[in-house]
Length: 106
Ligand code: 2BA
Image 1: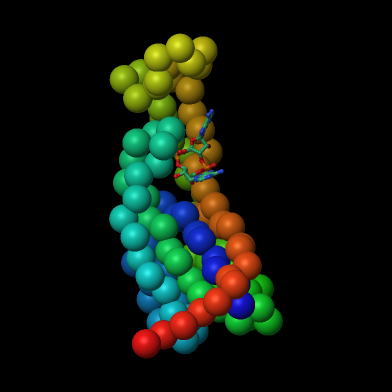
Image 2 (image 1 turned 90 degrees about the horizontal axis):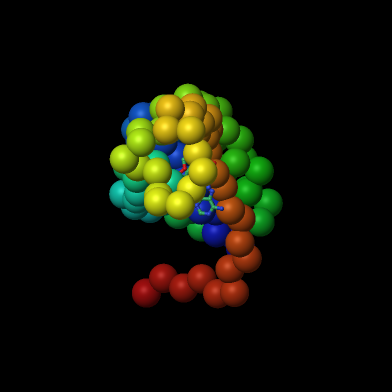
């Protein structure tokens, strides 16, 4: 079994959540904040059999768009040498696939 950890932009959250339900994929939604932009994003935890990981990743890929964000001067951590008006491309989705040692439901 694997755990897919998927960080997506807030704008993509609802349609991805619906796509999980339509595709019978179980997921837990967490409200999270990006460490760099300090903007709200969403982290989904998806426990899935090994042979269904690619299907899960395909669903996430289909529903996640890359967007450009302007980094605000007051959000840049001190000491970082960045142009205050720099544009960054966020997403589509940042995904980690990790092995699950045990899965139990009581
Ligand atoms: P944030 O940390 O708010 O980052 C938003 C975007 O800012 C990133 O998009 C990237 O384009 C840029 N960025 C982040 N750190 C940077 C840095 N030190 N210098 C220059 N640009 C930087 P994504 O890479 O698509 O990441 C979107 C969100 O996914 C991140 O939001 C964070 O919440 C999460 N994430 C990305 N990589 C991660 C990682 N290795 N571990 C944990 N979370 C990660």
